[in-house]
Amino acid sequence: MPEKPGAWLMATAKHRATDLFRRRKTLERKYEELGRDVEREQGDTDLDTAIDEDFGDDLLGLIFMACHPILSKDARVALTLRVLGGLTTEEIARGFLVPVSSIAQRIVRAKRTLTEAHVRFEVPDGPERVARLASVLEVIYLIFNEGYSATAGEDWVRPGLCDEALRLGRILAELTPTEPEVHGLVALMEIHASRLGARVGPAGEPVLLLDQDRARWDRLLIHRGLAALERAQKLGGATGAYTLQAAIAACHARAPTAAETDWLRIVALYDAVAQLAHSPVVELNRAVAVGMAFGPAAGLDLVDALVPEPSLKAYHLLPAVRGDLLRKLGRFEEARTEFERAASLTENVVERELMQRRATECTAERMAG
Image (cartoon, rainbow, N blue to C red; front, side, top):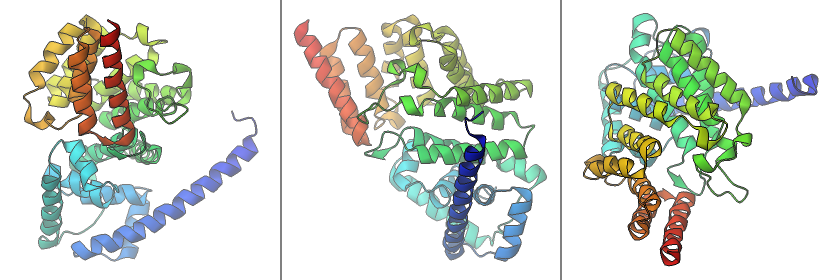
């Protein structure tokens, strides 16, 4: 309970009113943007009514509509992120690990397809809503990820994007209470969001997971995340991709200190994720866990196997992870080279400074040795 419930309620009400006003303005702008690309057969008034009655949130309703089955899965996600999620083409490209030009083409083709098909922008229900759910979840997760680790600019995190993704996820969980992966995604975002305050130091510098002051983690968000994870598991979704990732996040949340993290369980969970949704990024994350559970040499073997992967060629976290493992093995000169490469690949100013600082530390450690 807050110390002054009355004052807390008033402040919350004011913030809610401000949010509603902002979303209404955003909706009006998005209507104008969509109107230039898609021929709508329903009037704005009917559309507003349908959204309010069925979803309770304008932006979430529009995201569902943009995830139309006439588009490929990748096109739905790219279009929704660009037009409704507010992400740039560069940010979306980073999420997909593909060139910016490819994302731009997807968005253009998606708009053209919707226009030529005279798609009705209407609120889906029943089986059609379920069919679009996977794309909606992916959109929300990518928005959260961009807030949790900004692609470019001078900010290490963008809490506003995390807050918006969390808000949409919570609303979606209320609307689809029997969908386990919705609760799994909410659990994953809640637990990750609990660390936001500890991810940035006093001077705005990034603080990596194992170095964070766990006393600064938001216990309320962790509690909410663990509760959502339990709901997902009780609904039979223990093997869903988002629920498995939430279980990994829960291992960190439950560990009192970094040294007490159950890395063996995390490796097992990543094995399950890799079987369900295999990707180079999942394999890279698994390599980190293997390095923590079985030693840096074991992790490095897995990372080295990923070096030829085309989709990771410009992915800065590959050399960053490789540099960290080499550093732990005392191979400081090789580690320095990897950190410098990671610095050259990232477009985030703060992250670049972090990689450059780690490269400098490797030089000092080599000289000291």
